[in-house]
Amino acid sequence: MRRNQRYQSGRVPIGSGLIALSAGASAVFVTAVSPYVLALGILGLVLLAVGLFRASPKTFAVGTGLLFVGVVVAGILGMASVYLLLAAFLVVIAWTVGQNGFSIGAEVGTDAPTLRIELVHLVSSMAILVVGASVGFGVFLAATGGQPVLALVALLVGVVALLVGLRGSYTNG
Image (cartoon, rainbow, N blue to C red):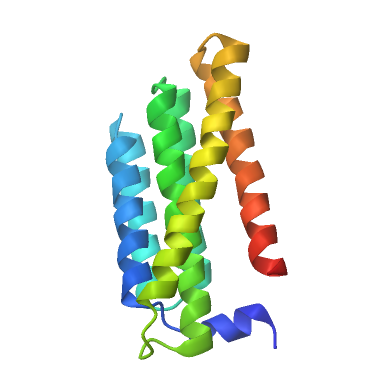
């Protein structure tokens, strides 16, 4: 059975849904540096919520993608790199917890007690992201002297590398 077919029947457990929504809303709050970024963030958050509510991974992915674009636009507008890092961290947490929620919902349903596995996934994802972001931020500070445009590039490369690593660890294990 193809992965997308399996996801279509599974609803996201309430814990994963609430964590993904909270992380997404926090990212919108952190990146609200202009009306355009705020509108983009709110649209992304609405699509994220609709994707979770309707069990639509594609809508969820578009929503988290728009949240990430909001982080990029906030960086272009000159947001401090620490806040960019925090916002990117929150968007990745929303994405990975939501995707894991779709997987759990498809595999065991929403009636089974899943809070423990959801929390284990959240904590392990946060640990991986904190380590990766810390190393990336340290390299950025050492190499660039803190230039905001270079911060955006370094953060984007770091986020892409972390997503590739997370994706590989979940598909292989």
